[in-house]
Length: 130
View 1 (cartoon, rainbow, N blue to C red):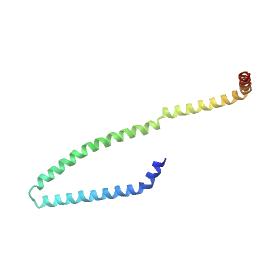
View 2 (view 1 turned 180 degrees about the vertical axis):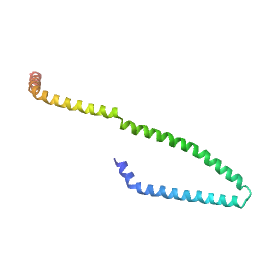
View 3 (view 1 turned 90 degrees about the vertical axis):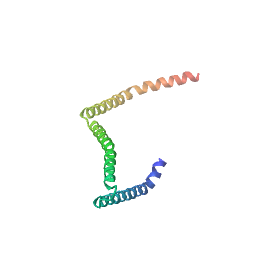
View 4 (view 1 turned 30 degrees about the horizontal axis):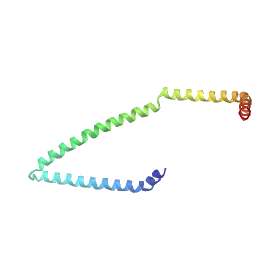
């Protein structure tokens, strides 16, 4: 309980720090891409090779990210579908009916049998004392 309250105190700062880091990273990547485009337009030495290497890196970096994204979305989709499955809904309703019937049955029977059990407990207590 205490750890969650500590996290809630620093949550805004963590969110702000991560947002600022993301903005700085995007600015740096954007500046490098702009520089690469300018070098390619001026036909500077090595600009085509750098463009090819950056393109290859982007493809190699995006492929696993897309695969992980696809499977995580499938997992979430199947999980959410199972939460609202009609069979599970019906099973939950049946369990609720069963528990309510059991409580009603026990409540009625308990009133009838409680004096009997009370006498048995009293007798055992008296036997143990003698």
